[in-house]
Image 1 (cartoon, helix red, strand yellow):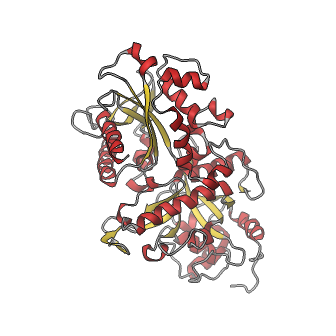
Image 2: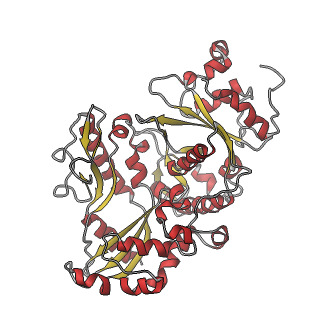
Length: 480
């Protein structure tokens, strides 16, 4: 190994410039088979590629220092995969794992003292194209990104960190969920059957977890790359232009979720008509009328977002939060099932890992429920405008016991899609399963989706049963 590095290890921009030599090539092509053959590294595990890059390409000796990989420059090196869809579009493969959570140490750290903050405030993220059964030595690198966590993101991530650590301090490390937080998740690590870890304030062992930037957050980085239309980009000197639901000043004084909830409170107990009058909005009988006024309330202070959807805001996009508007009867029973996105059959067949599946990401995201209530226990259209009242607004995370049921739900869907059994008679239905079911959601009979087995298939969608949503809302009432 040369004593003289081909870049300045004290300068993150020099390291970034040098990383561009990787783009369009594999590690084998860049460093040569001889260097690979003489290396003791085998590239095993998800962290193996980063070690290979650090030692063989950047010629930087691997050490046990817990700080950033390029400590002189304060820069952390991360390698992460992209998948290419049948359409040719690139898609984030997984969350970006940042640092293992040591339950015994993290409870004594502040955010600014944490290893996550010290290591990952500025990262060099090198994206490669994932190909099944291809050696890590031969994977092609396609993007290099010098990414500094923006101030606004850090404020949200700081709160995420505190939520995770507070849960560990309460002796609830075994109850951690990626749905607890916005951008920074406590993701599962290891395989099923791995020995759990001890936690400091409970005798209940907890699964191994790591701090990770969620897939939704990583998608916004990928979108940033596409907007720049370059293979190597940096956000350090770029001003963010995304539509935000909240401001930096607001986040300095309150959490993101509290800010959103506070915007709804002045409208509690008001009817749909009264809310429209306050918002200066023309009432409507359209099916999405509740969603329209809820969106206006949630985006208070941002006139541009009012014409869009809160789900399209910077914060909702980066976190994967979804707002769901629900109508209930006076007895608390929810009127309708709640739909999500259509099943991507190609994603199903190409993924054998529940924790990396789209459904796992979807169901472990945070949800913002906005509940309006009708005055009677039956649907009466003429009462909708005058008497439909805003009753509840809350953020919710699916509990672990229901995530376990969702895994069975996904496994059943995967089994049938793998076997080309894409039909309602094979999937979970509402009559037999209390929480989730599958049913069509195409616009009409001609609205079909590509079938990985060839041809086209009817579009089916993930659904929450109305009984399950009723349970969620009633449990929330009991907690208030």
